[in-house]
Image: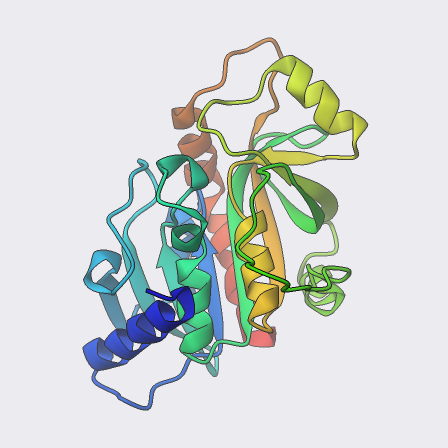
Length: 265
């Protein structure tokens, strides 16, 4: 099935499940590794739907990624919150990776907030530090675009939205996010390479979703949670539980930050 057609079907199914055939949403958030505890700070969901109940979605394959879609009122904004995402390393294809973004666009969303848990290359960023994504480097060798679809990515991570975040929290740093496919963590030599080409943050998500969001005409805000120092920086081994623990300890700050940002978008 055509990916855009499938996204339209998923949006229609969503409207049916919330009991409003004309429903639209303003903003969507994708909650990455370590971010699930922060979602509760956005408020009590009006609806919570298993993602696998919508066309084109499947149950999450990674611990800590949830598997539901919430509809939440945040201020005067109606917000979709994806508790979980599909990753390239799951082998389901790029269309599955960006299906949530395309479904949100089909549901009327005009701004997409992409969050992730990632490794930090800046020693000043201890685990639990939020960093705004200023730009990205896509090292997956893949794209959600097909054919001669030429999309300008100059201001992919919208300056307007980053300025809004700085109004809320002027202390936030910005950085360049680098995506690899995973699922293995990077080697110290790979981290050296990423540093040499200008990367500040490294993870296994976000860039393909951001490209699909721009293709759909959405404004994009990227927000990383540094969950660990990148490989080779401390001499300690990396593990997924460390990622989740950083999210748990930072949940209150991350949730408060999102709750203040979303009504301003």
